[in-house]
Amino acid sequence: MPGKLFIGNLPFSIEDAGLNELFASMNIPIASIRIVRDPQTGRSRGFAFAELAPEADMESAINQLNGKVMDGRPLTVNEARAQKPRESRGGGGGGFDRNRNRFGRRGGQRGRGDDRRPRNSE
Image (tube, rainbow, N blue to C red; front, side, top):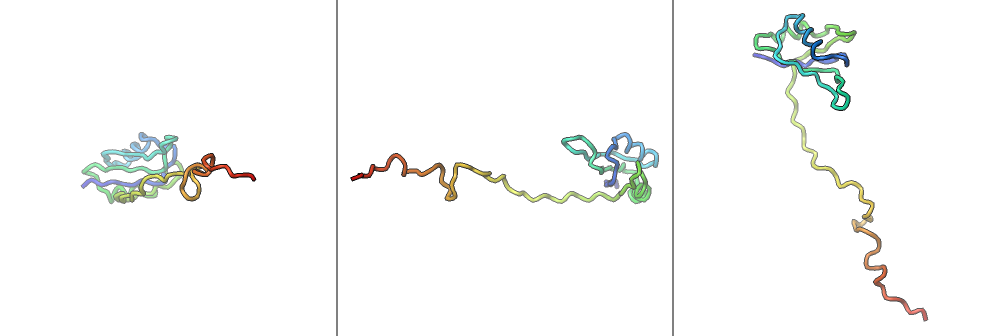
């Protein structure tokens, strides 16, 4: 049965080809590799997931790769766990509205400005 591996503590300069070469040099057949990257910079976040080919032995792959040094960093290799479902946190808040007072009313003194009757100054 094919499995999925988590590969952690990867060098940030790692490319897909470098990880493919590592698996090929150890004779571990893989179906796919996905290096997780930062969406803004495109740089590796230091971990990846590899889906093993059906004929691959997961325990053997973990034993061969776990602790192997790559660019001065010892790799951490485990069986990948299923991602936990995330809670819905709801929509965004209303933000800060400068036009509301502490009672939730908009604007200044409504009904108290120009519509007041003038006082008699006598």
